[in-house]
Length: 476
Image (cartoon, rainbow, N blue to C red; front, top):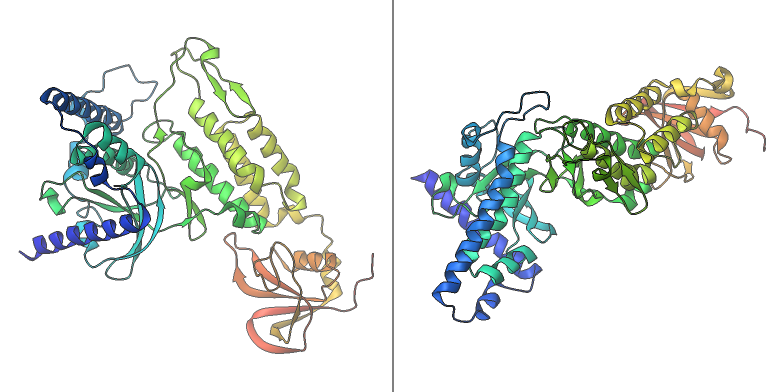
């Protein structure tokens, strides 16, 4: 049977790749744990087995609410029973793959894949970048066989196979969350592999999550990027938090909210780590039970008539977005016509005065002003009259100067709404005597303008326009 042969081949290849990576990356081994284990009595073995089974049941209880249909707070309090479980989804996660659904990948898709690099390793998971047989890059998440969670479990329960199943529950939980929380700013689940295709081979605890490939978020690099790109990251984050506040699972809080939990895909921000996302409500008797504690600030939220902390997950997400992202990315070098609106966002989110609806509205308003050029109304129309324009031409023999932040490290390339804004920028640079509007655009649709101190001659270029100062602007 060719299909089964491919599946066995994929499983064997996957095991070999993972083993090779782990051996080179990490130094401990499961065998070392086994070597330290003294002979055990039957009573000790029985106790360990019972304790491990208890832990497995606990992990199952964490996933059950995610498989149930969300119960709105306005609906009558009726018990949500196991009979409502999405067993088809759970069976696919535990014993098979999702290839039957749309264009998702499965164990067979991993045949002849090539491991490229280890993207990260943590207590629980290992993330590996691979190229599939057709050259398509994807990211694989697997149980970190040499991670702290696996090592501690083997040390406690002396059962590597049972421990692999226990640790793999985080991956299974993440698969469910990725299924339930589909959004443009959540990493796309491409498929998964549980053991061999169809669950054959009895190793369903070997779970591999197949994700679209993203680039880890580099905050230092982002801090050096143009304001427009930094604003995009913050806007994407707010759109994500707005979705999470009313998701199919209810209001979802990100308990481990760090920049390392995010990647970018074609410039768009995406959440890639969901195993610490929670839709559980916090119950309370008084407002004092609803305190959000941060390193430098505490906030007390109202306890609702239902006995739950009103909007706690949403508010926690907003403040974490403020302290990890907005503080560093939003205010610096914001366009002058938008600084007052940026300041309002910083104040409202830093003091938790606005909910996520109001925050998203404020961001979308800034985006509208920025892409429409309405924030430039105070620029005089005559500013462009100081320049001679040559359409359908580009410049050659350029003498470039650098500005910061620029879309090019070799020169001064900035985004502009129009030639009028480019002229205003050129006038503010003492070195600038000309600029070129190219056919390139940014994610907002704004034009890329290249600013220069001089050039030797013009060349035909149907997509460009060159603007040259008629006279050098006087020194101020």
